[in-house]
Length: 366
Ligand SMILES: Cc1ncc(COP(=O)(O)O)c(C=O)c1O
Image (cartoon, rainbow, N blue to C red; front, side, top):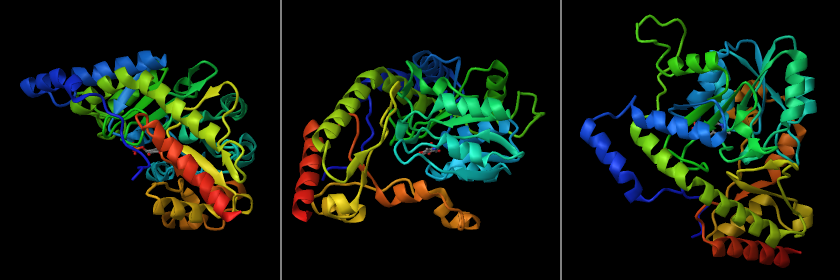
């Protein structure tokens, strides 16, 4: 079986000293390894603050709360359900905009069309790690005086014009679950350069409590624990090497499948480097010979695991109220997209095998 993904973990031996220390002191939470992880992440990313939290969803929740979001927030439907859910949890109206079918990221023109007098923020996702059109989005945000919260759940390692993409906007969030380029098991980061906001977010993850038990705002318990932080510290040490491997595998896929009729890859703009949390292709049935779903089925028969992702938020049952919303590009992409096996330590021959099986399936069906 060639799996879709596996978490890339540091060597167990590299964790042992720190784990022993935690077991000796009993300091499981709220201690030095979380702080060390935060400092190392901030330094690696070239940002002022990387604030460790329980997961990407609570990072989003804290970003919205600490920026006092009300009214409407513009976001893609082609992203993870958390983005819609957190808005509803915070009493904010999600305003879904459409994507560019080549980059799979929010289309700035669609953002502009979605702005109303109630808009308070734009919340774009760097989909699969592909940096958004940051300059265009920044321009729209300044013109309409709204905040930008980047969902960088997939973007640890992504670069925009020479800098980590996570340093842009008012806040960025990261997810560190096992499917991500860097993992702490469960975990997330809030990335912020503003001191005041950083202070508020640090209190926010303690329920908003500044130790006098007299909270001034509604926070949420969303701390990262020390064991997760240890995994993050050691994971970060091997991250640059692992990320180079990942991008090498992506290049191999792109080279092998280049020019195959009916197969297109996500467009990465010049000046951007995607972290490639996922490698996706769009399958055009007319040109390739079979549909995306049929290709997923054929690959499964050959023991190759793939999936179709994202399921657009506005098409989900809990978002029934949006059932009449039309987002043509999002819907088109949803019919064609599929994720190919990719993880940083994946053997090169797996990528070669997947490509040769896809090529032979195309030959069989033309
Ligand atoms: C784009 C995106 N945003 C947010 C999240 C939420 O992160 P978490 O699962 O860490 O809460 C995810 C999770 O996969 C995601 O893919």
